[in-house]
Image (cartoon, rainbow, N blue to C red; front, side):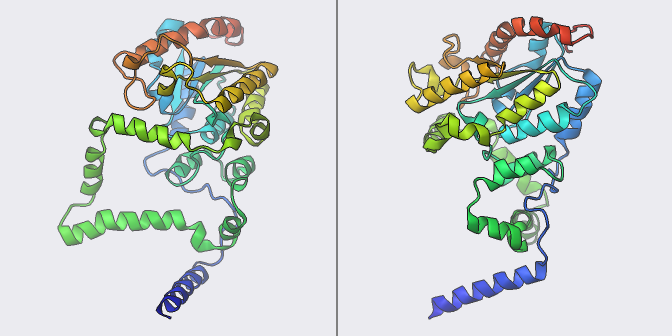
Length: 352
């Protein structure tokens, strides 16, 4: 009986909270909440206009920890800009291309997008929780394609109903953020006498990259990435539900050469380590790129990248790995740069 009373009380609290917060927002997916520490979107917009890069590199930490843009500019004698965000995935790349690059008064000649395995066609990858804010940063208030592919396609019906009609459910991220802030800043200050902000500083120090157990991090990464849905590798099934066709269409309309760069993962240091379903997927992906006149550079089987070039997980180290991969990428890009030089009428100069 006591359990029934507890359930009834919990339901009453939820219903009351929804009534107090009524009505729900009209937008099914809300993109109005932005990151607290400034907008990368404005930074990228200014960079395009001011530095006028001929090549824009787009990606996540695999780009940040893989390419040294200054060295690349020197090697290729082109102005290069690196637009990267750790943890970003295809939804973020699509929005940067659509809302920043395609709308800018300056158009680069080439955009190179760095990706791993099948993540290029997983539109709902890293679009929720803490990643939603970085997606929102690049999103307009209304993004129907983003909402459909990244959120609604993978949402079950109960979640859809809650997201549409429950204001409490809509505000869940904000509520979690408020509770977290209360505990870290107000509760610790009043109970333990800790100054506001000191908890954040302590967390940052504890979880600094230099303190990470890289072996354990790599092991956990392998475990997470092995638990994937088989449907993610069915290229014919996922391609029309991804952002890839839309990115190709935007670049084509703006007369920008699009290059997709598949990076080498630590897994691939061991020969023939790709799962059979991934091999089939990549074959179909390359065929699709070829049919759409899009270049794909695949470094997965490049034997020049060895274990000593890696740091933790799939990231290259900054001492030798990032330098080598930048040189390999520059070498592969030279014919593409020469082919597309006709699109850029401004003088070629290395980025400082």
